[in-house]
Image (cartoon, rainbow, N blue to C red; front, side, top):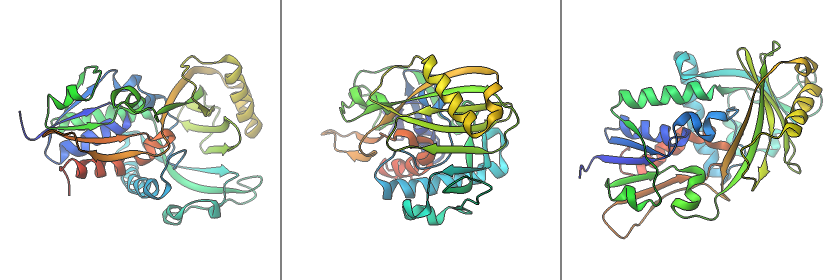
Length: 317
């Protein structure tokens, strides 16, 4: 068995980013995935950088800021990454309601009355086109010598038998692979419409409801959301929910009401009371690192978590 080999289980944004960091640190990386990246939850994410529904807050804040730095650099130098810096408003959010990480986000400020009717924050943040970004991650991984293999497993022991180091980035799959009953889905439904000309994003989340309101511009497409339905496993779009999403977004920007619907999407966020990012003693010679349970913040913390997972795996300083 090659002592430099690492198997990463899972090919969502957490798995692929972790694999890239490991491969670029000189490890021989194989990604084992039950489904290709374009069929993961990450592929349907709205993908605005923002620590959302993710704990523990202090660690998540640090991981988020590390990722923010990477995304800002990618946006400035690599259009093929699918990352852009885009302006927008978080309605109903105040600076004093956020953790210490917020003070370190460049340009984050209270929105003016012209920018937001009521309390809110203005920011220029990374917005990712996830199908594009996942493809870019796979190409970057391949350039570093890593490979992706479509291979489903029933237990992590199967990966530990094939490589000395395994990093578990299985997301919702960790519920059965670990097994970890604390992992559960938070269902998110989106509607993709033809963009009527919007260039800024908008979010408004109600902590007391499973309905959220947001729209994210991606060129000729506009992603509308959304929902946060705890414990719901359904991946079928609900027409009534879709209609409500469009109406909520159109109440903010009326031109959305007549936009042509292009697609319906549903993703199951892999939630947990807190992210599990730690090295587990396996009882054998193998090294097992867990990196899962990121809820709605996987894109936001991907690079920070990947760097920490690589250190735990002994592959980065």
